[in-house]
Amino acid sequence: MSTKKEIKLDFNSAWELDPAPEDTKHVSIKKQYDLFINGEFVKPNSKKYFATYNPATEEKISEIAEADEKDVDKAVKAARAAFGPWSKLSGKERGKYIYRIARLMQERAREFAVIETMEGGKPIRESRDIDIPLAANHFFYYAGWADKLEYAFPNKNPKPLGVAGQIIPWNFPLLMAAWKIAPALACGNTVVLKPAETTSLTALKLAELIRDSGLPKGVVNIITGAGKTGAAIVNHPDINKIAFTGSTDIGKLIQKSIAGTDKKLTLELGGKAANIIFEDAPIDQAVEGIINGIFFNQGHVCCAGSRLFVQESIADIVIQKLKDRMETLKVGDPMDKNTDIGAINSKEQLLKIQEYFKIGKNEGADFYQSSCSIPKKGYFIKPTLFLNTSQSHRIVQEEIFGPVLAIQTFRTIEEVIEKANNIPYGLSAGVWTDKGSKIFNLTTKLRAGIVWANTFNKFDPTSPFGGYKESGFGREGGLHGLSAYLDLK
Ligand code: NAP
Ligand code: MG
Image (cartoon, rainbow, N blue to C red; front, side, top):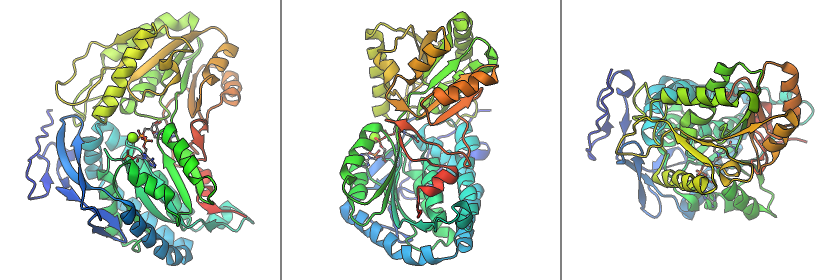
């Protein structure tokens, strides 16, 4: 079945996607989006708008308002005014609103999925089956906690922190918004959220949904812009908490900017996960885990399994099977349900990945790509391996954030633990083995916030997510995710 996805470039009316089979039917995208402050859409102070593009076609999709310091101030004031009444509502009442947001998100799931894929470049299969349902699940999950905070933290007298400034990246736009907003609201905080410049649309659709949900005005404010807008949120004096997900460089900058203030901070930063395959692992299953670990969402995943460690005795067979499996991956139109690897999110990111290709080759690693074809237009990268890499290579140490896997071999468990940990990051890791004892041994010794065993990239609202070292601090998800938005005595 072909998915026709021609877009009418009519700026006078809401955009309609050509009615392709099922998914694209009810999607409307406005020609221009304003800032969502105090329950309504308002023009930015500067009157400036920036364009957002479809990375698979390089076509302009819409225009997005650019918020400056005055807009940030307006949003923070709205959130502050809403904080009193919102935090005094009973947990049960707050929970009702959050449940309503979750249900509306489910109802509009297809529209969210299509827009997420159009603007972000990820395969529709992923936005439809993973991102959007998980985002709704986060709202459901935290709605359930809203009236149980006293039980979650007995004798701690949990109190909300106040106004939370939340800044998110472009790789999981709606999901990251859900990770941030749902626990903040459940705990009685109010929110000013800024999505990333290249992926504002689903956050703005969420703003429409929140307006429709009847959530009291000012409880959630969503303002768009680029790095400067984010910095204005961080530096606003009346913010009580900053929750940031993004790169380690910006995370460090934020930590410096708020040093000496009493703002609370959680940072979810970069990663370079070790995916470790032992000789006793179920090999075909492990190969699927390697594929999922690095090619899911084009490898734009902070917890991606971007370093493969394969035990020497099975290295040849694993690498051969991996190459064979890579030949079956379809790279291309993200809107096509058969696509495995969609578009790289932006030209900037495409260039960054290509730069790492040069770096890796110059470092002497062997470069390998599958033989698939990629579209002429749009930003695409073939699934890529670097073989014969060593621990000191930049392609092994640095986060590439693309469909690029650096492969090393190892002999002993001690050796692989040391190599896996010998890196500035500590977000996630994967272990593939038949032996439970090996799993237990490794989970205690790997310095990573999340360790998956015989699986990879599994997410659930109930389990805490976060890093060590330069991957940040604080946890999102589960009970831990609640405590990040509470003052606990
Ligand atoms: P980024 O450049 O750090 O941007 C993240 C967010 O911060 C964006 O909204 C960005 O705005 C904003 N920002 C930029 N400069 C800022 C400043 N000076 N002050 C405040 N905010 C500022 O990261 P990215 O390139 O979008 O995302 C990729 C990174 O995120 C990767 O390193 C990845 O590992 C990490 N990540 C981590 C997790 C996790 O949970 N640990 C999850 C997902 C992604 P603009 O983009 O609009 O400029
Ligand atoms: Mg950026």
